[in-house]
Image 1 (spheres, rainbow, N blue to C red):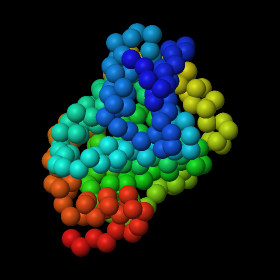
Image 2 (tube, rainbow, N blue to C red; image 1 turned 30 degrees about the vertical axis):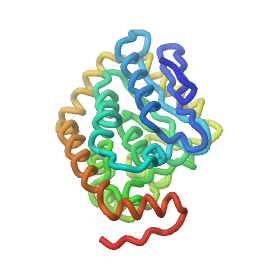
Image 3 (tube, rainbow, N blue to C red; image 1 turned 135 degrees about the horizontal axis):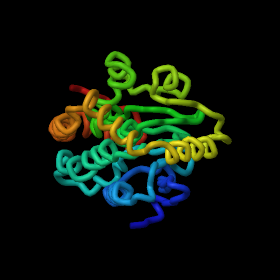
Image 4 (cartoon, helix red, strand yellow; image 1 turned 180 degrees about the horizontal axis):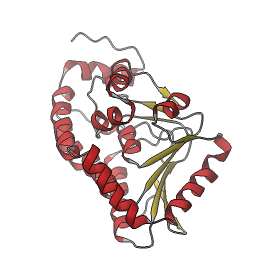
Length: 258
């Protein structure tokens, strides 16, 4: 499976998947399906011992491309999540091989969930983490409600969600959201170095460790993903989302009434 929106390279046991959809690497259903396919292949291919997830351009990803829903009429957020992001997050957490993300710029919304589903994250000083959903009157999904508090703490996660303020690279490092911050010009080489070291390591044992981490810290992941889809269905039909989305598309400040 290949497409220019996700570039694929396999070298020395490292499968590099590069988001490549200018300007903002925003996901639509077709791009999510491609990523699902790549992770499915990674699970079956013994030559893949580590996955490196990275992106072109200034943004890692703006998350879901909201223009995909621009046709009007009723849309089911629950069905969208159950088809797209919920299976992808589960694939990533259930892949018994390490996943490293190299984050060169802002990541928001569903792409934040994808970044959090990785095992390790390194970034440049320009890396930014934005929950994003509240900016258009929605609730967190893509397991952000579970994994962000698990990594940075409930109070910090609530602040980032309610105020929709970015967590910069320095703060992300201090809170454990990033494992390392390196100069922008060194990020690519450092990411490959880390990924190569992981690929040369005891990947089978890492897979068991990942099972252990999931069992100890994310045992209710499937339940949370299902519940997020339920609450997002409600939020998505509400007045706050209608106003938030309209304001986003019209590039103005939203006027929430609820």
